Length: 155
Image (cartoon, rainbow, N blue to C red; front, top):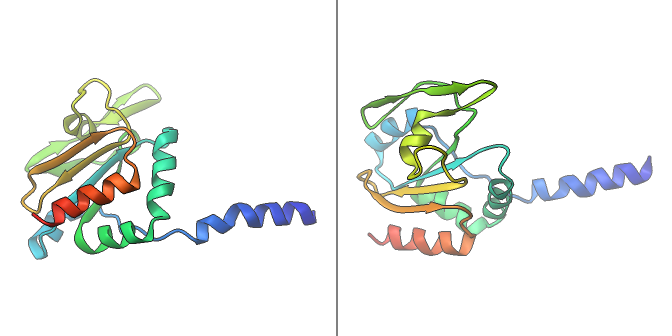
């Protein structure tokens, strides 16, 4: 029992060391942009994607990067296959497309280059005027993300 307690404690310790990323939704984005305009980071992921989980862990443990995102960007974490509510984004309506026991959101397909099956994770960065400035399919290392965000912040 003592070994189990120690094991559980050691498994949970990394969770307490992670920085807290402020995330928003597409429905909040329009109102946020009416106040303070900032560039937007859209992160499309799925709960089954191992690379997405690793990437999220690496990102959240990088305090400098989390602070930069929280202060200078709006961050939308979008679960492409579980989000089922209607989303109105840039004047268009997007809905969930069920397919048996699973499905995908139309917005995930619209944002992806591959309209049949998006590549996860997918990173999209928009400038403060909602223009696409960066698109990345697959894992994005924290160092590369930091470099890109610094470039975008300088615009």
